[in-house]
Length: 396
Image (tube, rainbow, N blue to C red; front, side, top):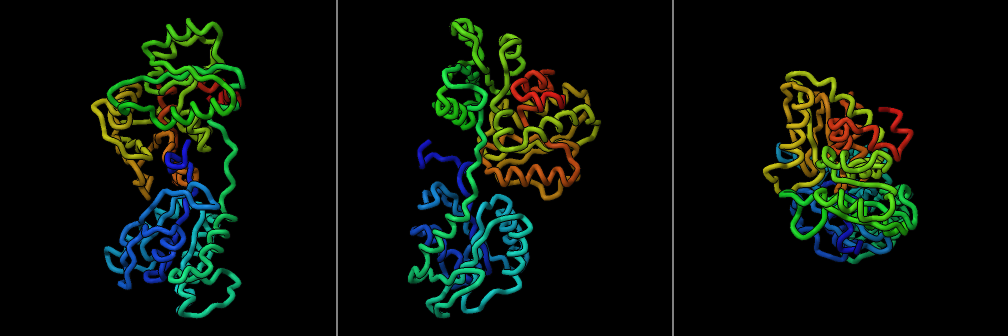
């Protein structure tokens, strides 16, 4: 994948936090060498988180996030602070920008406490050293966004804090070099024009990196494709939506799973998803299920999250279930009203945010699963789709 197309979920998320007028936006602009954020002497100029995907040497592909002042006031200010706190849920590295002419305040100390609580590595940047004078700080670095003093040093320190790259694979450890995987990609009304969706792209690249071969076919041509292969594939990976059809085409001795199940493993929550799927049987009339997606897209008439999953759930349980949906960065703070959460694969969310969402459900005592795992369960093939993960298969 090129630097320009590195998905947000694969980028290091760097959040800049601090009080109003500490110079966060100026530091962001200095670090990126771009006018990403509007700068003004007026307090509260940044009213919403501003993010920019870019290549930042020596860190590599990053997502830079400039946030509103953490000490904002009034009813609108409270909403801005709330949005800033939401950014913390996806922050891999935090930069606390302190006004060096004032020093750390209670708001700054509160932020440091949150960083530590959430186990977010952080740097304290004492801005405006062109006014306050250069000095050494035991807990940070003196910088100036105006004359760029120590900006390169700040970037170097950020790079040293960069989260270790996960060594998890999507499926390269399941299909060996020289082996063959068949990818089933239905082309329906919801399929984007002229391209594959992100999990399909990432899976193909993962297979190629491992030296495996990938054969891609629609579900309508799957039987013919399997017959023409000449050898048994090591794995068949399908879009979860066509599990009902594909399970009858793929021979029982060929491992079968889905893109969504593989993404759940890649993002670190497959075991939780497998355990959570069983909660479908406990749903009763009047219960509310949250169906959450990590991205926003144009809803089609047969959308998976708002149409198909609710229909399949109600058909399987025979219950009058209430469905609530969220998309993008929206995710409820209070999960207590829900009896089950069904999440997408999370390809557009970084690992930290997926962990936050899973952990929030766990702390609230709400079962958490994902699209592929739930659909496999509804089709009665969850155990089969986990054949490549024998330890998890035992949980079914």
